[in-house]
Amino acid sequence: MLMVLSLQQVSKIYDTKAGPVAALTEVNLELAAGDFIAIMGPSGSGKSTMLNIMGCLDQPTSGTITLGGEEINTLPGHQLPEVRRRYIGYVFQHNNLIPTLTAAENVMLPLKYNRQFQGNKASLANTLLGKVGLGHRQHHLPGELSGGEQQRVAIARALVNNPAIILADEPTGAVDSKTARSIMELLKELNQEKGQTLVIVTHDPEVAGEAGRVYRMADGRLDFFR
Image (tube, rainbow, N blue to C red; front, side, top):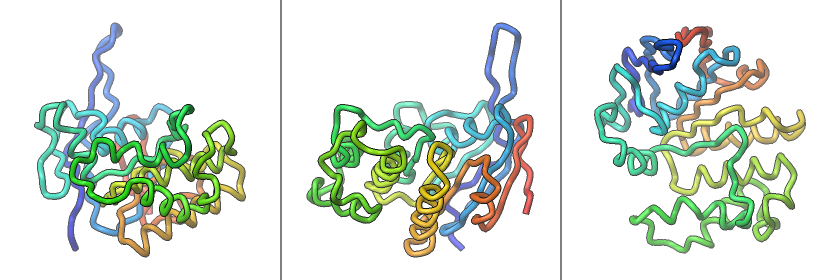
């Protein structure tokens, strides 16, 4: 099975006025194409730090990260956005939509930095919004959408570059239970039908229960749960 992401002995240490703080300690994880894992743990356990490092938004203090067969932990910071564009779709906890852009414009935004994309940006954005059930809301601003609709726009935006890996930070944390179920069904469908690797950070045992493997984080250490 094709391995898409590997973390070997990855640690992250922040220097603070009170001294060094270990956010991650010797984390090991391997993800193959089509894997679906959930990471659980209390606030401050290192979950978001780990997701940011997996998503090339941050770099580890030590350890080895291999993404798509390429060792990326030693790359200079200015090269990470290009690596992220090629491999990663990121669904942020608070969606991070641009309030002055329409739903379609928010979805298209990552394509602005994708020099290899040759298709019709608006057409692709509308197709993806249709995929998440929002084809009729393409011209609406985020402030005109419900929390669940905003999160669906964020998922469509994460898909626009056809990533090998989708990283989702508490994707159901700010919506009601019905919307949470529909978001999970959508993410599972993408994982099963397109073979995209899915990593979800969550506090919700029901959400974690949908994953093929579940890990727990505590004090910066990652352990297999089931």
